[in-house]
Length: 494
Image 1 (cartoon, one colour):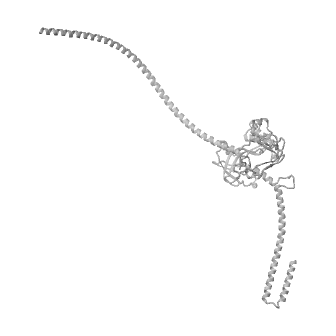
Image 2 (cartoon, rainbow, N blue to C red):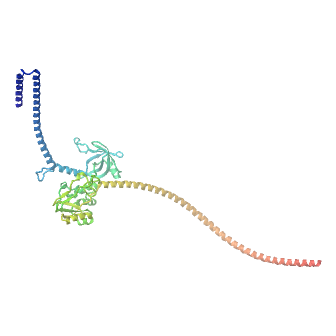
Image 3 (tube, helix red, strand yellow):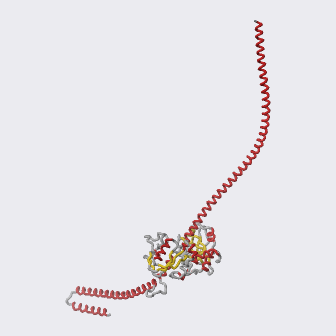
């Protein structure tokens, strides 16, 4: 309102000045003065409007800043809790996100109560929509092509809760949409897995990552994240043996009171409890020592690898965190009265724990039994590799058996031929022996005749020799007689 009055006053003053100067000024001067006045008036209006706009937005800016500060304070309170409260009654969003990240770190997504279709060749189509989910509550499964999932066959407990009961293998997703996926096994299935895949009477569970064994998996949910104390309570929370037997009886397909089920469950029930003398003696590598810190202690927990994830796992070979989700960026500070559990089975572990106790940093709260965790992925892969090796060995054994059977048949044919040949040779031998006997008999007779003939010839030889001597004598006498008579005749003639 004041600005308008000032404007009207200035306009009237301008008119008075124009009227008074009209007697002495020329027309163009009056026109120029009018244009300058109107321009100044327009500039004043623009400046006034700008000032008003600036004032309005300044007020809004102040309001928005106040709302932003309130929103940031509310965000900080939701994310990190109320700093004015010593002990928050509700977990902060930051704590919930960190807990969720830690739970999903080695678990991944899970699709339960999936319905399998009939296998077609080496593929099977699986619906990821649970049978009892209303149509308006169905959400896209989020599975993409070429993903690798681990498939388990589900079985229901007495209370209706379905749990994985049989491992069906590792599968690759060849086709996927919001409700269905087509799976192909990445490794050959054994006969039991093939039978269970063909049996469509049970639902399946699909795991993005192979389930990882943990100590808290069967413990009460109330113990998750709970700090340790100096009592003899189980380290990882109490485990209900009855529930464990029911779960593993379904998995092992045996009654809950079966001795095999009881023996298998015993290690889970004893997990995290004070170690007995028998466990210390029989399984020293599974003994951990519970310590209470009496002095502040710092320990490095992050890996020194320049490139994260080189170890291929969540921790490097020395046990330091090697993934961003677990990195702290600084040494972990253990305060006085904090309680921790340390391995005590290896010589290096014993040396480290004993040094903490000897230096007065900690005091021992006793040994505890901690069951060994199973690497299911490696175990299943090893089983599959062994299966493939067994199949290859069976194929080689079948080929060897076939070749051996062929050799046996050939050997049997050769044996039969040789047996026939041997029987013929034996017949020839018998005939030869008979001929030999006859020849021997004939030879003996001929020998006797030969001997008799020799004796006869010997006699004849003696007779001939005597006759020869007689003839010689006669011949000599005749010669002498002829010579004598010849001499007489010659003498008579002379």
